Length: 260
Ligand code: COA
Image (cartoon, rainbow, N blue to C red):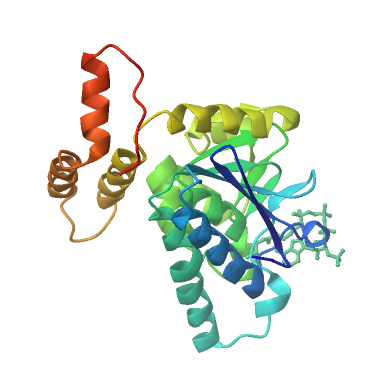
């Protein structure tokens, strides 16, 4: 597939999705959101992809937000539609993918950029990264899940302060808050994400998919996460991966998971 606003390549089990509008600090316009959806969907259905790493091109930004020039003259209905469509196509879609998604935050992650990073399963950052939800400084609120996912990740009080001040936090503060799992240099960012991806890839992709579903169930209204865990746990017992994982353990050898 060819894209205009992103790059996508697969190597050694990892699909790298790079938002590629560096002259606009990788701001998310409508076309980019659609292309990201398509690339994530393609990676998720590709049997050669075990982990997805998403990052921004250039040295300055992961994503500096939704593209302000695209919605500056929207009315109420268009605004609501922008948030609803974006959440469905990209942010909720990424969160619920069965393939693990790591955000490698390589610079500014603001507004929709931080919301994209937060929709990923977890985040690593380079030491120049700066994160924030500046929407109220534009007279709007976060619309791609930011008001929900930021408090989930860092707690309500810290999230309220970040949203109300529209301020940015640096990578170290984001690490202290638990917003990113690791901080490293810009050069080491992708190698670090690859190292973590390598550890993930040794495990059963089928079991990981069930685990993602169970963890996410904790954050869904009206869903009992413990019951989802019970169902997903039970399902594992019918998989070839489970047979291989337990047999390999008993035979004292490394498991070679068939992925089914
Ligand atoms: N939407 C559209 N364009 C954006 C953008 C966004 N969210 N963020 C940056 N850009 C564009 C700028 O307009 C500029 O384009 P131009 O060269 O055609 O004028 C280009 O990207 C470079 O940005 P610039 O502001 O010149 O870089 P900077 O280093 O001076 O500042 C930021 C960097 C991130 C502090 C600044 O770009 C910024 O505040 N961006 C908006 C962040 C935001 O409010 N995001 C939430 C949107 S809901």
